[in-house]
Image 1: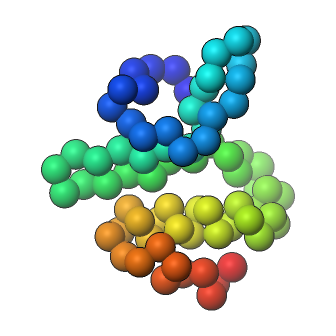
Image 2: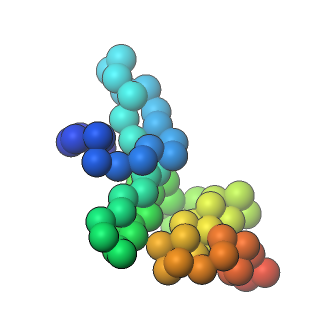
Length: 74
């Protein structure tokens, strides 16, 4: 949650100690893609269908696939 946010695209952030800290972001370098999320630290958060959709869309995006491709797995 700490570092240079100029190199990433922040998708979600939270206010911590008066500063916005990234919770979910993407990064691209060349043809490489990274989707990162610190949301879901506990296994029970995966019970939330909205979090599962966000995570599956992030995985699909990182793989260069249509973002809705994995939604039937939710």
